[in-house]
Length: 172
Image 1 (spheres, rainbow, N blue to C red):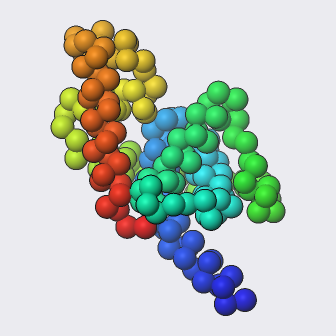
Image 2: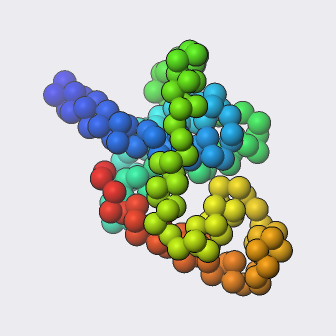
Image 3: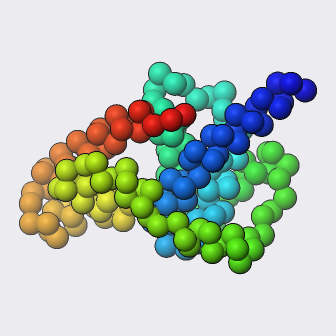
């Protein structure tokens, strides 16, 4: 009973510390508050069910969580809906979002995500935003920015490496 209470309290702290960043990421990728809320719920459910698979040596918990969010979001965009596998594993009922819930999601500026990206040099920030968030190909980004595809690849690679280092310093 004590272990269950500790797990619940630890996960609640983890949830509160990371909710805005996950929602910001999901809203930026989907541009749909309800889909973003569904994705955030599934992301946290998946993190809870897979918590034993988290390896601190491979990076921060926030980085791991955003990796889950990226996979869930890509999958939902490809399928056209959110797979609620982790929520079902936990025995969660399907969530119906209230107007207040959706207003909260809408009120979250992409600022949380922007704060993470803002630490990057401008060229890297734009390349990461275009490739990871907007899902543009390297060739498309090269055409728009007027640089070679190789330069775009380097900017994305360096930007992602810097983000990994930054996320590893975030609270767990």
